Image (spheres, rainbow over the protein chains, first blue to last red):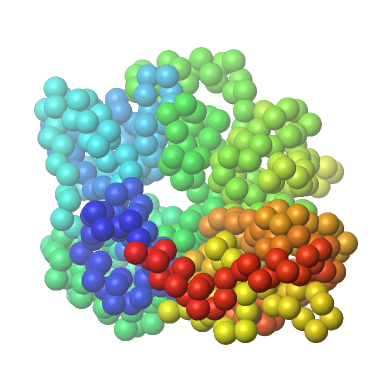
Length: 371
Length: 131
């Protein structure tokens, strides 16, 4: 299966025993599904699912220079994290404004932060962080031994909280979106990558992590693989690094303009000059959702013809909740109405919509009614 | 292990072929193929009366993750397609050799069937591909 040389998470044995189909993802042997990725998708939309996301890279930044360092490195401003327990989503940019990675930054203490970055970008991210942090009296420590579980779905928080250590139950249940709490080896955040409510948990003890996984399954939570994770995030309109985001495109043309903290103007983060110039000139393209009206399935890399010129599908698939194909695409700034997608040599009609299709179990389509 | 019925002919592209009493052949993909593809969510079939050369791409089967071509196992004219697959592409997963058939061809040279793999040869081929 080509996964023999891949790294294994602590849950690898559980996945194998559960009959998971394993695939190589960013150098890790990860479950694609445990039998039916469609059933897993629906389980998250309707009740609760759990994903092993231990391949994600957890990096702790600490020291008197930590805040300044992250304020220089991230396009969003960790200055907004006014107290420990607050978190935010941000892009990390290169000097040209291209996205080096997208990540979540949590504030854990006065001068302590935790970043969760992508697995496939681990090496370049760590090098990027170390180069920026070390001159500023901030240490960069990868936490490579922890397990990370994402428990997602309308029933996820209640079930997961009931299985947490006593001292974490109430704090976890009262977390607001993008907030976190921790006790002992367990770190809980109310975040996710599915468009549903839920927690992401980082557990710094293999025994405790395996025990939690087993208890979640015993409580009826469905184990879910990366296949369902991809269709869930696509329906939610959440970008995937390496497909929708890359070093050649800025957040302004990737649907992530809202994550850029322009104020205070004095904060000179990496990539700011390029973003300022791009904003002044008006971005050439925009990030949209596509809803296929004809038959077929849109895929990454297919070309799009709009009334304002050509664009590209960055992510496309079958959407199990909508029972039709949807996509994320980068198209010329003024494109609207309908477009044609080149699916295997055939022009198929699609409607341009806002890049959100499903949130909190509900289909949500937003398009220009006049188009 | 995947199922390989005795009475069918097979190709190395994991299609099966069955000669019918009326001289047409029914074409589908094997149990092994549907397992490898995963849950199908879309099947695109040719129109009736399309003329196909042997080896022509004649259908597309798509799982959530990827699209795969199906090749005509022999030359002929499409006499019927399985219209049920439009609404229920997963028939191919649940019943690859019966309800999940793809299309029926009127072959231009039925002798081509004799050159295809029989069940034993196909099973051998599967075993060798796994090494």
